[in-house]
Structure formats: C-alpha cells, structure tokens
Image 1 (tube, protein in one colour):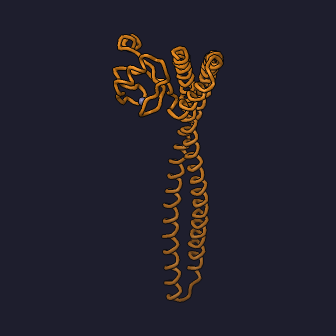
Image 2: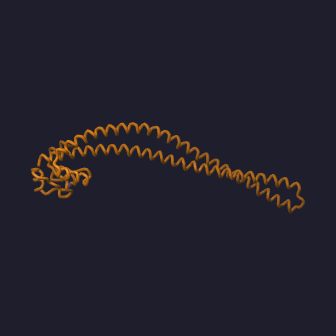
Image 3: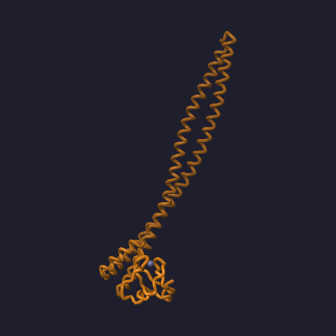
Length: 242
Ligand SMILES: [Zn+2]
C-alpha cells in the first residue's frame, strides 16, 4: 500500500506541475486578449465618432443650402423694393428682408458650430488612430514573444506529460480511477498531506485514530470531509518543503 501511495504522491506532484503550466499559458493568452479588447474598444469609438462626423457634415450641407436660399431671398426682395408702388407692399418686403437676414445670420452661426464640432471630433479620431497604431505595433511584438514563451511552456509541459504517462502506467487501475475522479472533482488536488492532524486539502482536523492510520499507510485513507487521499508528512518535512 505504501508503494501505491508514494506513486500517487508523485502523480499529484506531476499533475500540479501540469496545472501550473496550463495556468501560465492561460494567463499569457488572457493578457493578449485584454489588450486586443482595448484596441477593439478604441476602434469602436473611432467608428462612432466617424459616423457622428458624417452626420454633422450632412447637417452642415443642409444648413448651407438654407443659408444660401435665405441670402438669395434677401437679394430678390431688395431688388423688388425698387419697383414697389404702395407702402403696404414696402412694409411687407421690409419684413421679409428682415426675416431672411435673421435666417442668414442664424444659419451662419449654426454652420460655425458644426465646423467646430467636426474639428473637435476629427481631433479625437486622430488621437485614437495614433494610439491604436502604436498599440497594435507593440501588441504584434508582444504576441511574437508570448507565442515563443507559450511554445517553451508547451514543450516543458510535454516532457512532464511523458513522465506522467510512465507514472500512470505503473499504477493499479482502481487507484488511478479514484485519483482521476478526485482530481476532477477537487479542483486538481486529489492527494494531500496530513500535517498537525489537519487535512491540507480542506484544512479540517482529522480524528486522532485516523492520523495514526494515515501514518501507518497500511490502507487507503480518505479525508472524511473532502474525501481526498491522505498521506502523512511530519512537521520537519513540512518545514523543509516551505
Ligand atoms: Zn480534507
């Protein structure tokens, strides 16, 4: 029995190492994905600003047409003034000229406002474009480095996987089955030490009789709380590991 437990301890160490590799790879990938996301958000903002610029340009064109029409009406009414016969007609034309002059001024102000808004948005787009291209360049370099690093980790992981293959083939079927099930159910930790009468998987205290049995290692001992496979490790061993 001692033999099998020793094999399981070894297998657990290997699986923890593999989990560490997987974690490291995932961390690298997440970091890249986050940066890609940040760039995508800037691009989205740029698209939004460009749509707004287009809309403002359209409005500006419409306002310009309104402005030109009002200006033409002013000229037209001014010409008509020379031919008026009655003061009533004269008053009516004056009123129209005044109204159109007001419209000319008002549309002029609106056009200026549109131009200002467009310029502001174009500045923002230019800033974002600059940021994006800088970030994209940096990210491309970063991806190259990360790919190399991931490849290195994968190679290291492969050699540990080969070692795992050897270890599992040396284990008896039922033990491996129980171990594999526990590994999946207990977050990658199936075999744990008992230290100071405490299960190092769930940190619950064990009954004294069970601690004695774990120490003897004559049979399989499972933690009554988390069901992990237990082995004994005395304080000195625990300290030297830390
Ligand atoms: Zn436990």
